[in-house]
Image 1 (cartoon, protein in one colour):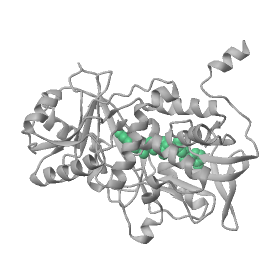
Image 2 (tube, protein in one colour; image 1 turned 120 degrees about the vertical axis):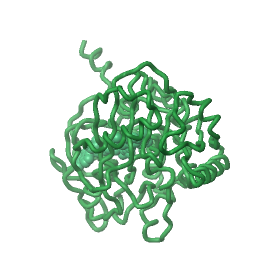
Image 3 (cartoon, protein in one colour; image 1 turned 45 degrees about the vertical axis):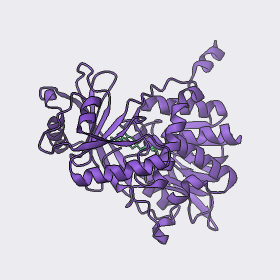
Image 4 (cartoon, protein in one colour; image 1 turned 90 degrees about the horizontal axis):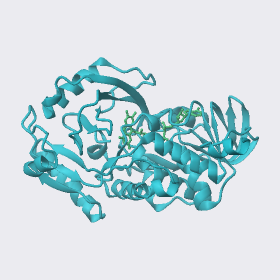
Length: 401
Ligand SMILES: Cc1cc2nc3c(=O)[nH]c(=O)nc-3n(C[C@H](O)[C@H](O)[C@H](O)COP(=O)(O)OP(=O)(O)OC[C@H]3O[C@@H](n4cnc5c(N)ncnc54)[C@H](O)[C@@H]3O)c2cc1C
C-alpha cells in the first residue's frame, strides 16, 4: 500500500543533506529544468532544488504562457529558436501532457516604422530558419477575422509567426519537477536561502532557514529575487525588479485562435481553452517587490483592448494578478559564471523567460557539467555590461512576451 502511494507521487520528500554537488536556488521552471537536464544529459544526480515557497510560486506559475522565437537579434532569435524546438517534443520527453498549442502569433504594426521593424525581424528570423514573415492588412483579417483594424491606431500589417503558441505553465513546472525527481534530484519546498558562503573567491555552500548546506556549485535561478541572492555572494547585477500585471475576463464563446500583440498599444491578448481572454501589458515603470495589482492597469489595458476587439465591451474582468520581473538594460538575460567561482546566475528574464525554460535547463546543465560556457549562451554573459557588447532586444521583448 505504502509503495503504491509513493509511486503515484509526482515528487518525493527528503531530509535535507549536509552537502550536494549542485545546489539550485529557486524552484521555478528554470531551476527544475536545470536539475532535470543535469541528470538526464550528464548523469549528475547529487542535486537539490531549494524553494522558499512552493514550486512555481514565482513567474513560472504567473506568466501568460506565450512561447515564440521571433526575436530581433541573431543571438536572441537563435537561442529562443532552440528552446521552441525543445518545447515541441517536451511532452513526450517528460511523458506529461503540457497542452502545447502552436496556433500562431501576430505582432501588429501601426505605422510605416512599425512595418520596417517587422521586416527587419522577419529577415533575421528567416536567416535562422524561423518561420516568420510580414503580412498586410488583408492577411491579418484572414488570420483573425474578428479583429477591428481601424481603431484609434489603425493597423498597417503585422509580423506573423505561425509556430508561436501557448502552453500550460503549471504542467511545465510539474513535468520538470517529476522528471527531476525521477532522475534523482531532491526538491525541497519551504526552505529559504538566507546566505551564500564564499571562501577565497569560491562559493562553498548556502545558509538556509534549515541550516547550512555545502555545495560544489551554487546556481541562482531566482528571477525577480536575483539581485538579493547575488548580493549574498557579493555579486552586483545590472538588474532592477518591478511587476508585470495580467488579467483574464469571464469565459466567452471561443473566437480568437491566434495571439495578438501590439507594442504600440502596450497590449497582448490570447483566448484560453476555457474561453477567457488572457491579457497583459508592459512592466510597471517603478521598481518594487510588492505584488499589488493596480486599477490603472485594468483601465489602460481595457481601453486599448476594446480598440482591437470592441465586441468585448460588456465582458467582465474576472481576476488580475502580478509577478516580479528582473529587468536588464538590454532586455536580454544574464546567464553563466560570475566573478565568484562556483556561483552561477540565471536571471534577467524580465517578461520573457518562460519560453526559454528548456534551453536554459539544457545549457546551464552543460555549463556545470563541462565547466565551459555553451556557445548559445556566450552572448548573455555578465561581462557584456563591462565589454559594451549588449544584446538589445527592446524592439522584440518589451511588451511582446
Ligand atoms: C504576468 C506575467 C506574464 C508573463 N508572461 C510571459 C510569457 O507569456 N512568456 C514568457 O516567456 N515569459 C513570461 N513571463 C516571464 C516569466 O514568467 C519568467 O521570466 C519566468 O517564469 C522565470 O522563471 P524562473 O524559473 O527563472 O523564475 P521563477 O518562476 O520566478 O522562480 C524563482 C523562484 O525562486 C524562489 N526564491 C526566491 N528567493 C529565494 C530564496 N532566497 N530561497 C529559495 N527560493 C527563493 C521564488 O520563490 C521562486 O519560486 C511573464 C511574467 C509575468 C509576471
